[in-house]
Image 1 (cartoon, rainbow, N blue to C red):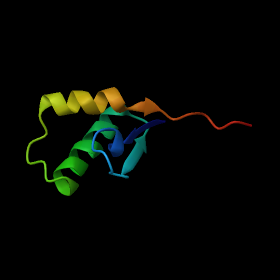
Image 2 (tube, rainbow, N blue to C red; image 1 turned 90 degrees about the vertical axis):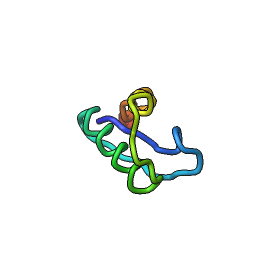
Image 3 (tube, rainbow, N blue to C red; image 1 turned 60 degrees about the horizontal axis):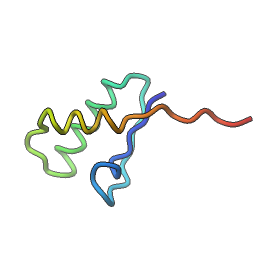
Amino acid sequence: MKQFECGTLVPGCHWHTEAEDGAEIVRRAAEHLRSVHAEIEVRPEMIERIKQRVHDDAPARP
């Protein structure tokens, strides 16, 4: 499972998402930026910044 926390890109934002596929994370994050942060166009540089912040969910400890 992969995760993204918007606050790593937009300080103070508490939105996060998780999905099996990194591409789905990027899609959701781009939509979030458009709808919540009023980004009209999510530029390729922003997509790269999102991708850099996608990480694997830490496995649960027994």
